[in-house]
Amino acid sequence: MDNDNHSNGNNPNPDFKWDPLRFISKNPGEALKKVDKRLDALEKEYFNDKKDKEENLPNIFGIYGVTRRDFLKWSAFLTSALMLPYIFKPRVVRAANILTRTPFIWLDMADCMGNTEAFIRNANPTPAEIILNYVSVNYMESIMAPAGYQAEARRIETVKKDKGKYILVVEGAIPTGMDGKFLTIGAKGDTGLKIVKETAKNAGIIIAIGNCASYGGIPAARPNPTSAVGLSSVTNRQVINIPACPANPVNVVGTLVEYILLGKAPQLDNIGRPLWAYSGRLHDNCYRRGHFEAGEYVRQWGDEGAKKQYCLYMMGCKGPFTWNNCTTVEYNQDMSFPMRAGHGCIGCSEPIFWDRMTPFEKPNADAKIIIPGVEATADEFGVALLGAAGVGIAAHAIYTGVKKKREAKKSKNEKNNDKTE
Image 1 (spheres, helix red, strand yellow):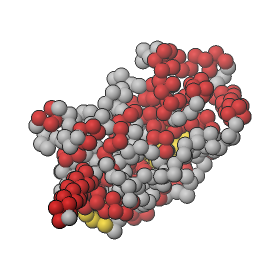
Image 2 (cartoon, one colour):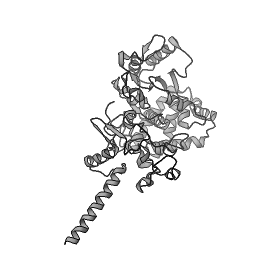
Image 3 (cartoon, helix red, strand yellow):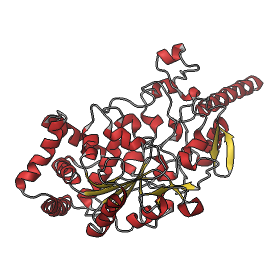
Image 4 (cartoon, helix red, strand yellow):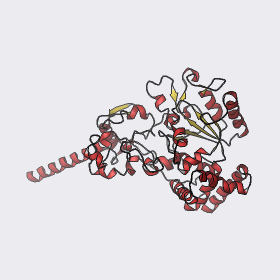
């Protein structure tokens, strides 16, 4: 997807009104009946009997020492994150249970496998990471036992047998140069481009996980010798983008849980991201925001401002330009995110972030923010936004400075006028 209208700081949907039950009904009672009917049908399909259904998640979480109370707390959190009414909490639990039995195909294209590593290499995984570890993966090169022809036969069989049911997750950009020959996979030497197109055709839902799969990421950075692109550029099917490096497992599982509940993709912004997870700017919910408002910034790594956890905007933090829920959902057992760890946001959930946002640690006043057709410093860009959008851009430090200068000038003019009179 080349559309990046709001990665420059504009709201992706200024008229956004959340309606998670939009596909069902405005009547909550009717909505619950339809959701329950769908869950009943899926449970009947994926579980052998009542005992199998009831023991599935407890057994999985028991392996990691996650108590029932811990899981219920997490399910309440996920229900809230999805902005669903509290009455949906037990249904979210049921959907998460079903998710572990839903057939999956996970394709790795041009990537570093950072998303896979983030989910399966965790010593103390969260419920979301545990669920992703136990989904019914029919094909995933990095963890499956079969290889060569046997592996590809498994993928082809799933595409045919579970037509319209399986979940397709793609990690990594898709090289399209030389008809895709920059990436070949399997015993037949099929191109990644061909495999993605074939597999996407019959998927029930398609997820692009990470920035590379969503928008091309680092493989698509200039000069992009392989002509790498995001998944949505090579299929006419709807693609749900879950960008970041790596994507937060809560955003992945939350999106899939909503799909299990409703049978539809969530509401998406104009570049294919679930609005429930990507409708807020990092800057707006950052715990350092108060320091930004007070004009207190880290100006050099290790200085007094860094010790006091001042705002990192002057050190290149891209939070004002980035839409994601890192500051509320967080990483590493749900306890941290870049700014809390002492480093600014690098904008990895935005299109063309590697070209647009680098150098990551250069002050935004000097770094060039590249927008299609425009090249300007971050400061100039902030002022341009102010004039174009007609809104208060608290996201840009330059705006605060310009405003103060204007007010000072206005006050001085008023005083001179008073003296003249």
